[in-house]
Length: 163
Image (cartoon, rainbow, N blue to C red; front, side, top):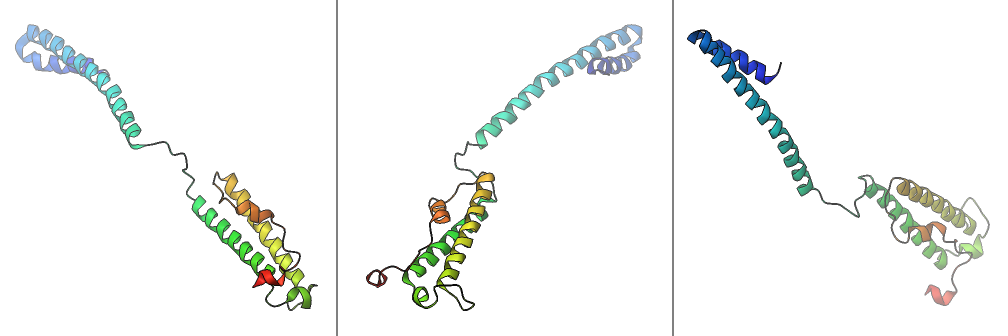
């Protein structure tokens, strides 16, 4: 039932105390009050929507570097794996234990080839982490891809570079 009809009914009840003329006046007045309420409500709703929209626009700003929440964890894993590769690369270039000369082939006690295999495995893991992060819309630390594709050292650095 519309507000105009509800107002008319209310006006009719109020005006019934004044006889038939009062009832008619009550219906007319009630109808006008109900109609006025309808107009005010219709005007208020668009204004409320406009105010809400203004409020949202005022509190949100476009973010060019925003990332999904899980990106921080993905980036942490990428950086950790990248740093492990950097460290392993530097250690292989130094070859403090002389693995290149003592155990060039794979042995159960460690070898140069074992270090190469571990390096390659870490790279595969890093490439997987990078792919997952990119699929989730995350940015990738600058040199991560370099370390995901860097060839492992084939031999230690010359001795004068190891000092």
